[in-house]
Structure formats: structure tokens, C-alpha cells
Image 1: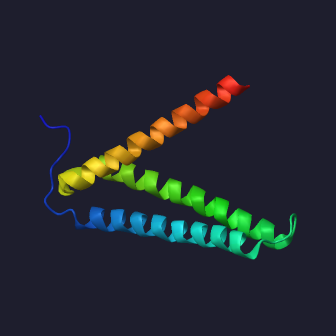
Image 2: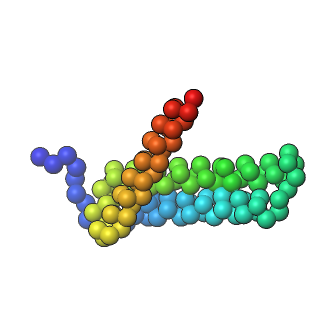
Length: 114
């Protein structure tokens, strides 16, 4: 007995996945724009401009991570991975593996340096 019911109409699920992808792209653009403005404008240290651009860049980066992780989890739950070509799946899993490896190495190096 299968643990899930296979449906042929995936369009609502794909629409939600596309929405998550577009939200992650929008937050990435916000983060990159704020970071670039921070570098180009070179506001004085402690100014409100520096604070606003720094917060915008940080929140944009965090939002990007949240939307990408949510999209990956949603694709896994809805079994949408099988609709993607194998090349895209390999690239995504490589990015996930690199992200996990960098996170673990960062945690280990922080722990050892204390």
C-alpha cells in the first residue's frame, strides 16, 4: 500500500513552488542592492544610513535563506523533485551539500578557536 496518493495535476503545487522561488529571488535582489549601496555610498560609521542598509542586507540574506529552504522542503514534501530534469536535481543537491559542508566547517572552526 503506497504511503501517498499520486496525482497528475501538480499545477497548484508548482505555482506555490514558483512563488517561493520568486520570493527568494526578490529577497536576494534586496540584499544585494543594499550591500552594494553600502559599499558604494560608504556611509560614516554609526550613521542611520549605514544602519538601514546593513539591516536591509542582513534581513534580505536571511529571508533568501528561509525562502530557499522552504522551497526545497516543499518540493520534497509534494514530491516535485521527480518533475525536474536530472541535471537540475544534481546541481541543487551539490549546492545543498556544499552549504552543509561550509556550515559544519564553520561550526567546527569556531568551536576549536574558542
